[in-house]
Length: 445
Ligand code: NDP
Image (tube, rainbow, N blue to C red; front, side, top):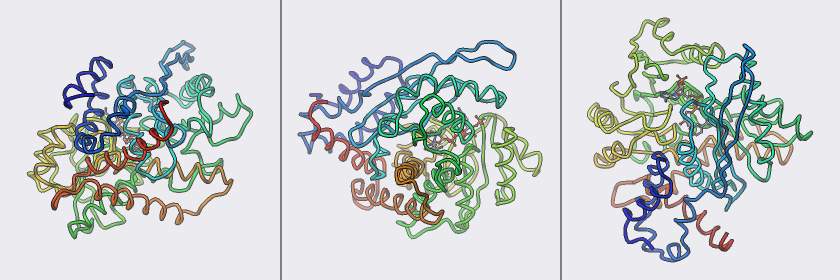
């Protein structure tokens, strides 16, 4: 039994030394559900919090491969199988040089709550490697993926663990991974989501996270009688989530004025319309170039090594990576008139930034609610694979829209105090209850 949040966190920090992103993710949850736990002591007595922060299994493995020059390279692979109380482990794979156990544990932990919020039967997991796909040839990426799957295949399965994409893992990588799994197991089963349409993928899966984040922001704005129509929006990143958030905002009448990558941001006050977005998609998904080339083509500002948050906008959708909005940037956004922030990425806002948003009572949608659309449609992909049929674009989009609306309603139900909805609290409590109750039902496991 812990007497305070601080004493609980001391134990977490001592047991998981150096894992600062994981500490941050645990703290955010514990802090927001602490009062709820005190009001529901059966969870405390059953030590659900102590159990839920401990991954069920952590796999770490060597990934040797040969580059185009014939040299051997060694990367490290991971799969964190965090919680399977409500379904098989489900969560993406991240290929990025920054990947380490702390980052994957934070992502896996968040995934448990996120997946619970979708109302679909999915547990939480996350994995990846410190492999950097940037600057690698298609052949090198394939060779790496094949080596990665040569170990991972024994740990995944359609009823065990079903990875998907994340940073650095898109359609190309999922294809190479799936091909190798099939070759080893001689089995065509839905062990990955985000697959190509011709081989078991779902319509709307590529769009789902970005579209979902915008649907969630739309619901938040709606609580204040507002909409995207005529609103100016800042998005960070220019990958999968950012691109489709941009597309959906355009469809809803908003104007996206920023995108970014790890080298800098572009600021286009005229808005990134459909035609310009096509250029971005070609640049990022096919040519694999830098965002700077957009500024050169369209003659707009390029902010070298800067994040986009100084832009004057009413809505912000951070969609690149963790900890990309700090306290000062949050303050700047609010001072410039931002009324709504929806996290397309996982944990992009530092805790002090979230405090600013809460103090100023602007609409703030945390990633585990706002970006749950991706995994939700992954869940729908799994259902279609099991049934061996495919739903239409409209059907999947409608289901995604409903799921985002339901997640929003759950957050409002659990997070409203007075007039203000604390979506962090709402999503954490709503996500927690379902998993915790399942854990209680299943005994001490
Ligand atoms: P992509 O790899 O498609 O795109 C990532 C984008 O973010 C790129 O523009 C990349 O720039 C930029 N970026 C990555 N790391 C950094 C960094 N350290 N600093 C600055 N910019 C960075 O990934 P996704 O769009 O899939 O994922 C983006 C975020 O959304 C992640 O937090 C992910 O966990 C989250 N998410 C993704 C889901 C999905 O379905 N894809 C589902 C739910 C959440 P560069 O090209 O220069 O590296």
